[in-house]
Every structure is written in C-alpha cells, then in structure tokens.
Image (cartoon, rainbow, N blue to C red; front, side):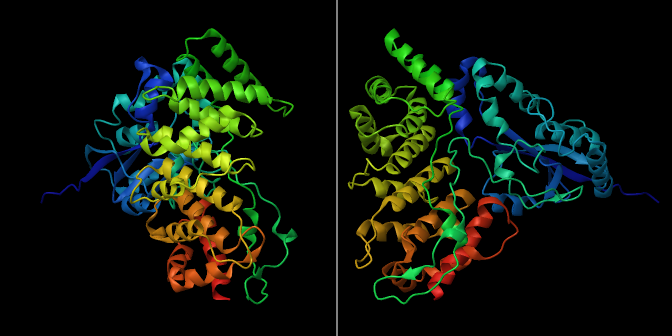
Length: 496
C-alpha cells in the first residue's frame, strides 16, 4: 500500500516599504550606482498563513492582513512545494524564537531582518531548494553602503515594527493583528512615517472645562478626552534629513556663496542645542536661494528643497518676503507636481505654514486641491494623503468660528469631504486626520459644540459613517485605536 505525501505550496510575498518612494528618490539620495527599485519586506505564505519577522516571528491570514493594513505585495514569487507539516514548521518557528535567533531583540537592519528570516524559513524550516532572491537580501547593504545611505540610516531604523526593544523593518505592519510564537509583546508605538514626522502635541484633558453647545444649543457636558488632547497643530519638524537636503541642494547650485550660506544654515538647524532660532536674515537668505535657484521646472532637488523649507518656515517671522514667495510658488504649483515625494513635502510645508499666525492659505482652490489629495479614490499615494490631511486639520485649527454664524462654505466642504467614504480609507493615519478635521469643526478649540455642524452632520447621515469608523476591529493599536475612540466621542456629541 503506497503512502501519499502531502505537499503544500510556498510563496514569497514581497512588499515595498517605501510605497514607491525608493524608486523615485534612491538615485537622488544615493547616486545612480546605488539606486534601488524598492525597500523590500518579505513574508513566507504557506498553510494559509503569512509568516514574517517583526517583533518576533508572527503569522496572519494573508488577505485579512493586507486588507487591514491597506498594503499589498508588489510581487508574489513561487518558492516550490514543501512536505513539511504545519506543526513541524510552527515548532521550528517557536524554537527560533525561544533560542533568540529570531526573537524580538535580535533584529538588525543590515544582517538580521525580515528578509533573512524569510530566507531561513524557506531553506531550513520548510526545507526548500531556494529562498529569497539575492537582490533582495543585498538591498540593505547596497542601500546603506554610500555616504547618503549612512546619513538616512537613523530614519530607516525608526521604521521598526513590533514590541518596544524588538526589531522589524516594516513600518506599515506596526499595528498588524497577528499571532506570535511567544508571549504577547507589549503594544508597539504608533507607526512612524519618516516623511511626515508629526508628533501630536497634547495637554491633559482634565484641565479643560465642560463643552457647551452654541447658537441656541443647550448646555451639555461631553466627555471628549482624546479630542481634547489634539489641541495643537500637527507639525513636520524632523531635522534628521537636513544634512542630506543641504547636500542635494548645494549639488545643484553654481554659486559658491549660496552653497556656503546654506551649509551654514544647515549646521545651525542641526546643531541647535540651545534652541536658538535662525535669524530673520538667515530665513530670508535660505528661502531666497530655494525660491530663485531650486523651485524651477524639472529641478532634481525640488523634493529636498521642500523638505528643508518645511523646517525653515517654522522659524519665520512672516517678515521675510522670500518665505512668502516660496509659499506662493507652492500654492500655485502643487497640483502640477508629478513627483509624489515632492507633492507630499509641498503639503507638509503648507501644513506648517498654516499653523503660523502670519500666513493664511489663499482662497483660490487650495482647499479643493487638499481635499482631492486626502481622498484615496483620487490620490493613491499614502504619504500624499497623510500630508494633505494634516494641512486640512491645521487649517481647521486656525479657522475662525463664530457662535452665532453658520459654517463658511470652506468649512462645509471640508466637513463633508472628510467624512464621505471615510470607511474606505485604508491608511489609519490618514483616516485619523480626516476624522480630526470633522471633529474640530464639530467641536472647535473654543470647546463649544457647533450646532450648525451638528445639524448638518445629522441631516446628511454622517453618524452612520462615523459609527462604522467607531466599530471595534482586530486592529486596536496606534492611530487605528485613536480613530475608533475619536469616532465614539463624536457619536456621543451627535447623540446629545
């Protein structure tokens, strides 16, 4: 009697952690010799599960995982058929965890990352004849072997996933609902977006007075501790990329005096140990160089110029004419920027600017452009949607709300756009920022419920959309959890 050996297909799922930005920026960051197509994260798909290394060895149903995280493989490779049973492979994974070989603490960006696990899992755990392609295994060394790669290594290391102190390279998977082969780790920090580093400045909710409705509304106390904590603008102020920006900008300058000026300003921004601000003259000089020499059609350094500009704008007094000129250029050119990275940086620059008392966003179409760029149906790029949503949120914070007046046309447009099709937004950070837009129109910083906004939201049936956002899902960490909590707070207000 013959015994039939059961085999199982094994696939390698390849993701791009840069969401396409590596292909656009690596040649500029690293030079043609070190250009790469993607920053790969890989996972082994077998037995109906997706196995990957991040915060230890974890596994999850592939479709549920991808739908939850809003990210999909750029390539799925067949590795062959295995005769290893699921029980034996799970035991191999558990042994790797317990021995420390692939534990939460063993991650190393260069030598021991998610791709190394996928390779070992295929070759050793599943006993296949091939594993992860060499070009994927070599990407970290290729990427980081140049001077520019070394400069941005800290930024990549901030993209780790998993438990605190543990490793993993895949920021998009930071909040993944997974099963692990060890005791459940403590919750990971929220996902870090190195292109939009916007910490939320918060204050203790207990210091806030009760909320009151306005315009013939009755007094009512509403518990909104999470919304209360979002009381300041979302600012993109990360300075880690400044040396890189200065290098790429000066490479495109001919005037040695301009180069020296920017290099001096770059050092002042990165060595600012005493929180000493740039002088107004320095802001003017930097913005003048950026506006006259870099913000030109087809200039290869535009993305880096905007990346630098967003930080410089936060130190502007509003008296620098060149800073105003840069902002005018952005508002007129942003919809024509074909580079997703440049477009995201343009929105971050405007987002920082609109938080300042001296700058008001123009009324001729910039909000319409932002609405188009925070909607997944019209803007597929996650980093652009996040940045545009941050701009809209900061715009709402700086808007004036009158107790006895109807909402402005712009406020109505933003309120409706932020909630329409909100459930279809796959990115938790973008979704949170869009919900914040609606929440701060409903409950302005004056801490009073806007009856016109409340009435409009009820009339248009938005409580149903908010209810869908508020529903508990398997993803209960980071921005996804904040989004659910914020939606529940809004429902409490709307139900009162």
